[in-house]
Length: 147
Image (cartoon, rainbow, N blue to C red):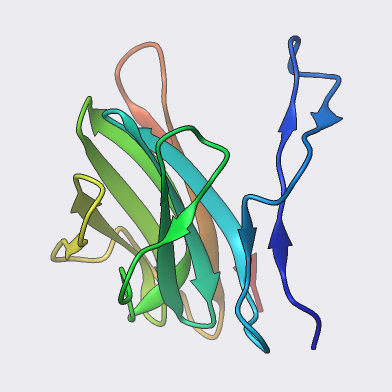
């Protein structure tokens, strides 16, 4: 299996992107990494990547050079969507066997929150959550459903 590379691209208008030189992350041998999720927490850039049903993390001071963190951030689900809830704290929504769950962190270890944000329905898997805050202060989650 080929190594996975995560690359980045820049845009001044949000429509036209130019790929930056170099890789942000290169997987270890025979390791499949998918679905990068990047967020800036305080002064540090964090990248969360799915590795099967686990989440691994990487840290960067400049958003270009990422170093792998030790251990797993989550081993109960993967494919994350992170949302900054304060300047130094984030909520991470992730796909789990029973639906979409959440955890919080300040860029370090995750603390999984109790409860299921959206329960799995029947034989369908819910995943790839992304959350945005609307102008009126409410939140909207987008996610996929797979049979």
